[in-house]
Image 1 (cartoon, rainbow, N blue to C red):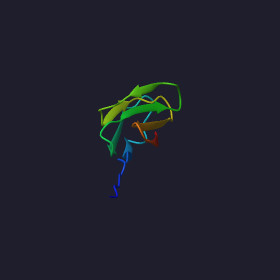
Image 2: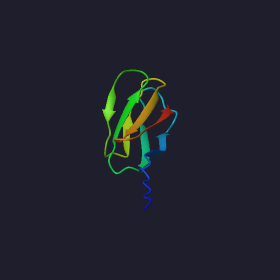
Image 3: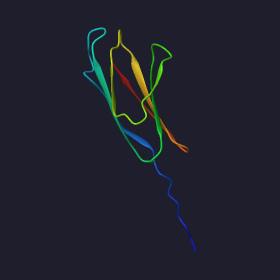
Image 4: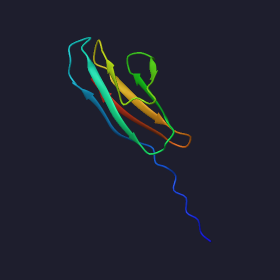
Length: 88
């Protein structure tokens, strides 16, 4: 008997900023779609400070960057991690 096990594949399918160009402190919506593993956590961090937000269970968040910044979305399951970035 041969058994084949395929582990779930965790993937950030999309991560977008809208609008991408705004005046300082303007409103930007970051949106994402994650597929794969049923159980994962999501965190959002930015390149200007050490703030990390737990966005597990969410598909978007509104931010107000004071200057150009790169946001990093990280999806983590028990066996995999995927990351993606957006600069606004």
